Structures are given as C-alpha cells and as structure tokens.
Length: 114
Length: 114
Image 1 (cartoon, rainbow over the protein chains, first blue to last red):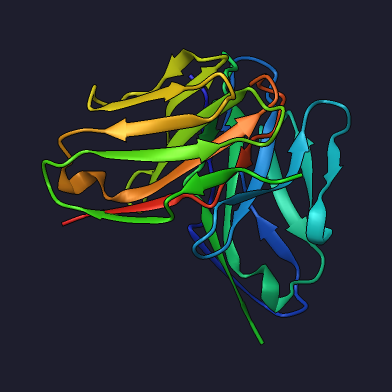
Image 2 (image 1 turned 90 degrees about the vertical axis):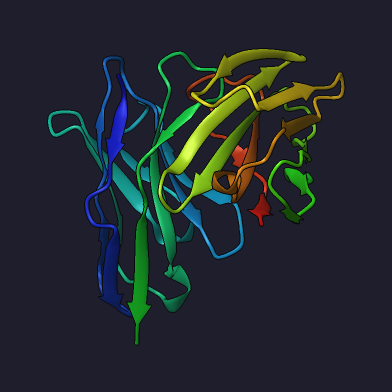
C-alpha cells in the first residue's frame, strides 16, 4: 500500500529564513509526487510535481523539491520565507491504480513570523 | 481558463437530512474526484468519475454517492446526514485521471451539520 508521511505538523520560521518541509513516501511502484498548498478557506493549489523527468523540481512562488529515491523522500524547500507563505502544505502521491486519486500526508502548517 | 467551480460554498444542515454538492471541472477535463477534508482524518478520497462512470471509490459508507453528467459536471450526494459528516468537501479535476497528472482543486463546499 502507498502512504505519505509529513514530519512536523507545525513548522515556524522567521521571515527571510530557509523553509524546509519534510515528506517521505512509500510506494511499490515508481511514484508520482506532488506538493500542494492550502490557504484559509480555499482549496488546494499545486506547487510542483515530480514525474520522473528530473529529480530537482522547481515550482511556483520560489519553492522547489528534490526527489531522493534512496531516502524515499521529497522534501520541499524555499530559500527565503515570506509572510505570504504562511499556509498549510500537503505532500501527495498518485495512487498506483491511477483514476485521479491522490494519497495525502497529514499536512504541515507553516507559520512565518517577522 | 476558468478553474474548478464548486457550489454552494457553505451549507448548514441538520442530522438526518440529505445534501447535494455540485462541481464543474475545468473545461476539457473529463475526470472528477471528490475528497473529504476534516481536522481529524485529513484528506480522504471519496470517489472518481470519468465519462459518467465511477472508476474508483474510497472507504465511505453507501450514504455517500455521486454521479457525473455528459458535460463532465459532477454532483455528490450525502443522505441521512450525521454530525461526523461535517467537513470541507473538495472536488478536483484532471484531463484523463492518469496518476502522473496533477489534479486541479476547487475551493470546496464547507458542510456543517447541526
């Protein structure tokens, strides 16, 4: 069975500091991985996706993630946090059967303080 | 291109009632999935429709049902509402539902059961 684990339900950083949100996955087939962001009272917005073309993936708003097969990880980073980055972030893996089904991690709430 | 549209945004119902939620996918997208988001259980897959056929279903009771129309619009129905059905219900669309495809989410319908 596939699963996604996000370490740290809450992460707090200072404005301008590095953002690192951790995601580990389990999958019996080559994974397709995604990071989504959710702002209050909104749906999920795609930040970036890994579909095997490149291990370092760049997304929107200055975020990037690196796929490491040996560590079964897909951590999300941003060099310098902005106040507007405060939101909840979800890592997800595409279900091995397809059919538009994502398996999500529990989410990490990012707080950015001045 | 218009995004995924969900209506209504908010609903308040009482136990025992039934409710219908609507989702209009991005134009050209034929796969529509539904998710339930709660603080305790996180994001859970309900079901997926493609070309008016349900292709995949999550572990929810039969009170949760859905359908898709020929124009790809989808509805979700919950009968005999329970307090535990209070949640944000998210709809997501993609072109064909392949596991490498990112899903595009609507802003959700927040359902509150009194």
